Length: 254
Image 1 (cartoon, rainbow, N blue to C red):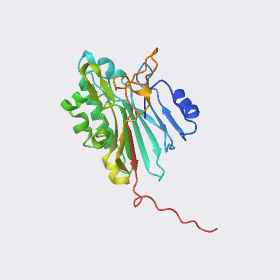
Image 2: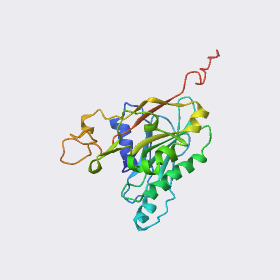
Image 3: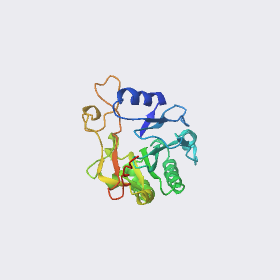
Image 4: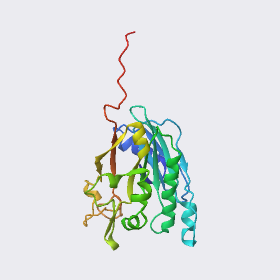
């Protein structure tokens, strides 16, 4: 799940050139509602089972501060992929309104994620990921992760990554936050047999180019000898226990 992608060609170039030996095949970016043309994307080793689509988040401005983002916030990208055992999966890539926008817009976006969940087939595993822009302070006050989403979704940093501090550090408030998260639908885990491995959840930040001299994410800055992003990625694995996996077909002689 990729955030802040300028166009589909960039993702295809990543797949076909830099990651050409990694087995990626599906590359999806759909221009949505941000006039800056910066959208979420998905890169997958799995094939799609139908066409992807974009969801417009039904945001409603309650004051002047929310007017721009209510109309221009990026859509939620929905990409359908088939897992190795044939299970259908839906991957949703999100990028919620930033902290410069009113908290009620993130509340509306969070509620919409749960609304999408209600309409999903039970036998399809659903994963949501990206930049939710929900700070530690905000989650403590509003409960977007720990209450609203946690009811329907297993939230990555609530399930594992217990020694992780966060994916983003805000220096003025000396605050670590999980602005970035992965959600796995609880109902589809029970139905499909695919499960989260809590021990797999981590923040991949081993590269020296990802870490600033303060130990926080090193943002990209022209003129600096290092710097990739002011956010670190988050990683999670799902697996299907052998007892639940589809049996191997017995070869039949011609």
